[in-house]
Image 1 (cartoon, rainbow, N blue to C red):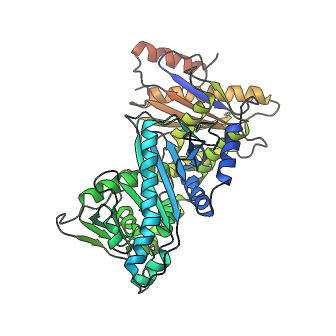
Image 2 (cartoon, rainbow, N blue to C red):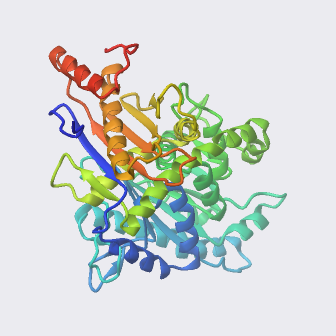
Image 3 (cartoon, one colour):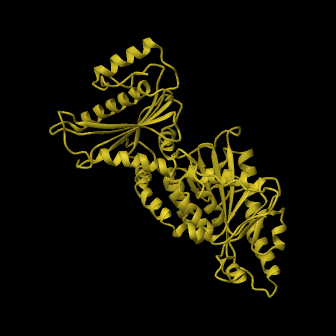
Length: 483
């Protein structure tokens, strides 16, 4: 019985391991494009790709203006979010008047970044299909930009070169980060050395990072959802606050020290007197990092990076042409976009949820013994943040003498069956991500990834038919309750 012959209640995209006909030229072009970047841009790309992962990260993309024009220094297209980075590394001028030095550096670094970012944002808004990963403008970015009505654009200026001058100017062991002052609007920063506000006044918000705070943000908020959530909340907070923060890191310390209940991330604390100037003094971040709670938190999250490695491992197979699509619910979807869909669902999870998923996946992979004739182990989880999405993790043991291709087919059928079962077991589930693998003890390691939409509500008759089908596969357990 073919588990992919589904009724209209289900839509499945399943990724399998081998497809020699896949064309990897896109990824080769991406590698060539990144080789032309400056040292500073390569460092930005290294940090950003670790946080946003390779599938959604593009170094030095181009537009087809003229003979090809660089759009920005780094671009992230992840779901409905588009992150545009500009990177400027300018030597800080040596002038006896610090205001003159600051003004010159501000003009060559921050002002030019702002101009590049606003120009890139404008181009993306007007011509979203004219962005390429190569200077010849032959290969469009692999992941298309989201529609305008759903698109969220975030502008990030990375400005390097002021650190040593800032440290010397403030003295007393001060950090090198730029001060955030919401009272400064327009380009008034040029008159306040080492302070930044909103260069475009109340127009587009631009996040300005320096060499210290870029590292801190992309290390501490190293998933797309965590980073974007911070940017959105930061913009809202600073737009309504009367605040001076002695560095982006002090702002981050206030944010991470205020966790929301039920694993729903973090938020900025409410200011006691919004009409009065609030000051986040220097030292909060260093104190936060020295705390036992911080050390335990970082240790707790170490396992979560196994989830990142799983996504990147599958991405590497896509790049090499050793991953293919077995089934698509929409024939118009390109294979590359089918791959991207299921991996993006996995990458949408924040660091803490990744930890929970990685722990369950690692536990299943470590299963070695066949108990009571069972050769498959699975776990079903509903994420603490996205309660309409479930994950089904399956490990199936290939029995001695079993043909491996037959084993893979049986494993995919089992995975699809367990994904269908979770819809009947948990109320409100609208999408399921399934991952099946060999155990760690197996000499061969392959994975199957499946994304299933199940937004349609089943009638009682449809539920009974589903139960009969799942029982015939040996999937449904009689102790389970159908909701």
